[in-house]
Structure formats: structure tokens, C-alpha cells
Image 1 (cartoon, rainbow, N blue to C red):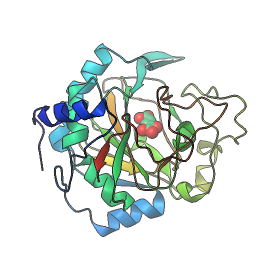
Image 2 (cartoon, rainbow, N blue to C red):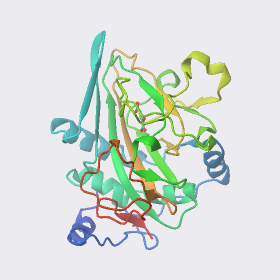
Image 3 (cartoon, helix red, strand yellow):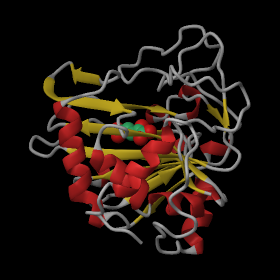
Length: 298
Ligand SMILES: O=C(O)CCC(=O)C(=O)O
């Protein structure tokens, strides 16, 4: 397994091919092999649509923190910054910056993340969809509303995983939470911006149920986490997070989105997807074979 601190040499080789849209996977097999996940972890992931993985990314915490600092100093074109009604810190969100942030590239191409995704999804192939950085500064008075990710995305399929990696300790009362099993409900709920305005007014989708108002009706799961742990979840799993009620601690998270064998490009006519992937010309139903979605495991 290659480790944090690996130079960008492999990436430079890949960028050359990236312009032609033909990516060589870096794990063929084994460039970034990880530990074998316990069977119970994989079973829990498939049953509940979310599972905690302990300590897998501890060696990458400093590097990802550096990447986030670089990202926040120079946000991308799609950055979103929310502040709550009561003042306090910002909720900073940005995505699709891996191409220009070396620490993100190093993590994506050299950490065990792709191999962890392969095991959880039970896929032969793993592609990058994108990275998403979510920072709740101290006293950021903005909750992350309950939502599924897939209706926001230009993706259909079941073989998907996000690895949400906290870079600060996260106690149970402000961790990311999930409705266990909701990835199997066969539903897409209406995407909203994190300030609760709909992403698309007329998308024809039903609103997310009121989870917080009736928590006894749902199997809500979540874990206290340490930096370098991860929670893995399916793009269809309902999830949300409280505001940051700490007056002194920020909550930085790096969320890596991966695609497995059955993921296909979804052209959702008449609606905006998030991320927008404005330059992707794939047809509806196509394998996601584009330079934006490099193959990590083949
Ligand atoms: O970090 C958060 O508060 C939300 C994370 C999230 O929704 C995601 O990674 O999909």
C-alpha cells in the first residue's frame, strides 16, 4: 500500500492520459490495497446503508486537513457558505476540487479509500465521482437537513458509497446520522439546498419525511467518531447532521464519493443536479466513462 507523503508522480502520469479521457486505474490490483474489512462490516453496510469504519484513515488526517485549509483559502466556483440566524461560525461546503488540490489527489489515488469502497460495494470496478468538503466552524448554527444524496446526483444505480471522514473528534450528539435501511425504500426524495430551499421547484418528488419530529418511528443510527474514522453510506441512505453546538471545536469532514459496477449516468431533464458536471456529455444510462470520473480500481 502506498502511504501519505507519496509524491504526485503517479498522478502526473494519469493527468497526461486524463486529457484524452482514457484513464489507467492505479490499482491493478494492489496499488493502494487496504485491510480486508470484517464480514460483519460489509453485511451491516448492505443491510443498513451505513456503517462506521474505525481508524482506517488515521495516517491521512494531517494531509486532508492541509488540503481543506488550501481549499478554504481558495474556494472553487461552486462553494456554498451558510450562516445560521444566531450568528456563529460558517458552514462551508465545496466540491469537485480534487483536480487542483494535491492533498486530495494524493488521498484519492494512494489511500485505501478505493479498495474500501470496492469491498463495501462488492464491485470489481471503482470510479471516483467527486469529493465534498463540509466544515462546520465552532458554533455554526446550521443543521444539515435530512436528505438522500442520489436525487441530487447525475447517477442511478445501487453500487455507490460515500466515505465521510471526520478530521476532528465528533461526539455522538453532533455526528452524521442515518435512517437504517432507507437505501432500500425504492424512493427518491426532493433535494433541497442546505438552507432548506428546494434545488428544483418542480421536480415531482415528495419531500423528505420529518425524521426529527418522529424519531421513534425510524431506526436512526450514528456513531461518535475520531479523526481518521469513516462512516460509509450508500447514496440512497437518508442522512443528516445537527448544527455544531461547540463554541470552540470545528467539525471538518472530507466526504469521498465512489461509484461501483452498476452506476450509470442519469440525465435528469429539466432539473439542476448537484454537482452540476456541466462539461459531461454522456448519454442517459451510459457507463460513467469520462475524464471527470477516473477509474480507481479495474
Ligand atoms: O457533513 C455534513 O454535515 C453532511 C454530510 C453529507 O450530507 C454528505 O457527506 O453527504
